[in-house]
Length: 272
Length: 282
Image 1 (cartoon, rainbow over the protein chains, first blue to last red):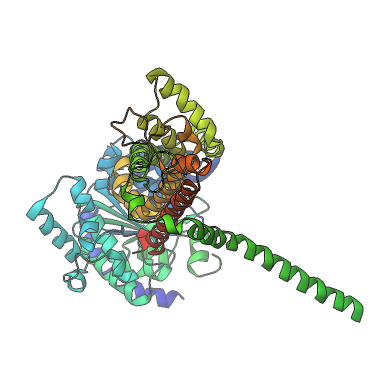
Image 2: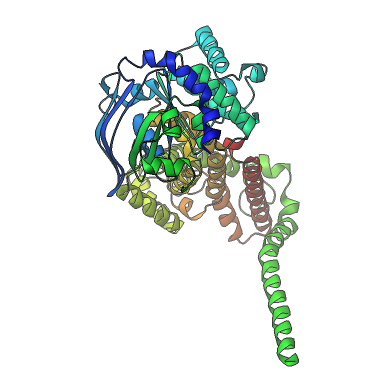
């Protein structure tokens, strides 16, 4: 098992040398002492974590460990669920995410969901949605849509059917459309909640490839069930268990020399 | 053993035919009514019926043109009041409500739905007819809107709730406000269902009689304004059916046939709209 992961993580270890230089700067997201409650049930326990800019951070852990909940708190999507409560602090470039205007926060910290959720509109209108909210119109809108669809590596497949329904696209294309839609408003951080769990391996590979390309302009946080995926694409990895962040480090460290017994057990498939 | 087995087979066969018969009775009622209406009123259903005013009592011929227009007028007034109020109320229940208030509204809407329509007529009578001192198309429209509101509220709520949650989240995650997400994503996704509910609601009020008896009353001539009494199909049918003239009876049957065909038409329309599937999947 170890050796498999070693070969998988080779690509990201090579990159570590140059991105570790950038890591010296302030963290993009600084989370301190975060607790989260659904009613009286505590789902997250005292989580503190720095997420570095222009890197891919993966969050792994067994089902129900709180990794998706954690992700949702980062752009306050938890507020759509009734009777939830947060304590602690989340800072985006030093600014409090919990105190910020929620629309502003969500434009700076975008999100892509587990199942592709295109709106019942045309491909173009899907990508234009966030831009139109911001008042972008006309030629500027068309250019921004094209740019985003290209960034999501979808342009060649949909350039002739921009005005067809988004539901005519395949599942993988729909998910890349959702990524394009999130990218259109030029977010600083992109959160992805198991974005390829509903997709086949080829569509998954396309998404992973495109995430690599986004790193230069965007900080990426991805929740994944799939450890190989974390090993393939993430620079840093955090391991969650029972609402606690057990360990957070460079992906190579987490997969090759984890400091904690729980992490090692999970990585080597002894549970979960 | 064999006896027991035969009893079981017999019971099964008996119950099967019994339930089948009951099912047949329930569908055949519609065809029976339709056939009876055509048989009795088909002959009176001529061009005059749609273009002529009623003839004086005892004189044969004439039509229900004023009642057709009057019904359309009343239903239009009811629609203009009932649909916006019911729709926005339904949006509130499905998208914005807390726990206590929506519960109350939902409960009240269901109760209102079950209130005998004659009571709604009495209510509108004291609310509008008494202060205005006369019957009017407006009062009829208000009475029907009171029936339309709760059905529209519930239909809107039901179809908005059926829109998958991830669609709302997708819009919110892009920085849309709650209202913006609802108006630009959720409502368009539910539009077909909501429209179906509205069409069925309108079809239902078009046939209501009791609330109109003492609100819009009746009129043997063209109505001259919204504040005047106006003829309507259901009240005209009622009036003609209890009159002592054979020709009027035939016209009442014809009126019933027109009303029933309108219902069938709108129902088929509604089914067609809905059968194209929920909008969020197309």
